[in-house]
Image 1 (cartoon, helix red, strand yellow):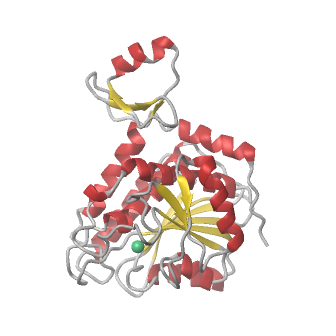
Image 2 (cartoon, helix red, strand yellow):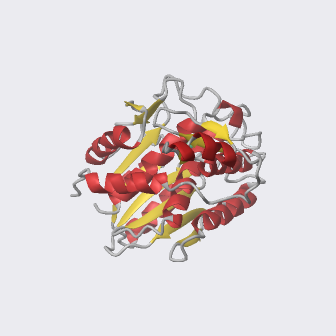
Length: 330
Ligand SMILES: [Zn+2]
């Protein structure tokens, strides 16, 4: 039985990691605008390097430059939505899988200790698993599915909220911890599943395999939809999940994000946490909204990038890094 205790010191450490999201840089140009925020409530202001110096640095005002995180979230989301669809048995199954594999490797490249592998299934869209090796022999997982489905299996399906938004949040957490050269006690794994829309098939394949080979998974935090939230909440669902892990995640929301906690129920097999649970592992589900106000556009051609809030997704990224840093010491 795992006890999910909140560790204040590691909470601070994760804040430091997130505070360091600054200087993975595009080539500096004098006119380049940077997105800068001076408080938790500040949504950010675009300014040049010169303005940063004149308005903030020279006056001793502390600030965080969040340009790179925001541009990563946007670049990756656009790339995913640009696939006509990412249906797991469709024309773009293999190319979207290759993009997922290449992008996970690129996000992890700052730390050569991180492994990135494909996990094969019976269909032509492997899942992707990145791992930051720990020392304990136990594993903590964050997950999101990258396949999409439209109103027909071959139809247009940008899958922006469902679930490019979850994937890019997990990718950004991987990038941040890779750049920080974070050394966990428990191995941290980042799972990008295929075939979710075909009945949780990617996650089921991975988790059944882990169970058969005796992999000790302490916790799974699954995210499916992180960018559409009219009530500006983070929703931690309470059915078909591990109660202890869920209540732990609910405690993390006010520690690592500026958003209100919401709770709801979504029924059996509503996303990939169901596969972890079926394999006997503690799993929890985090989403951008309760059921009633969730995106009306999913599973259609209208699940577009324009419906997303990237600042909201940034909050999910912070929660993900917080969970991983906390979870690295479970
Ligand atoms: Zn989904």
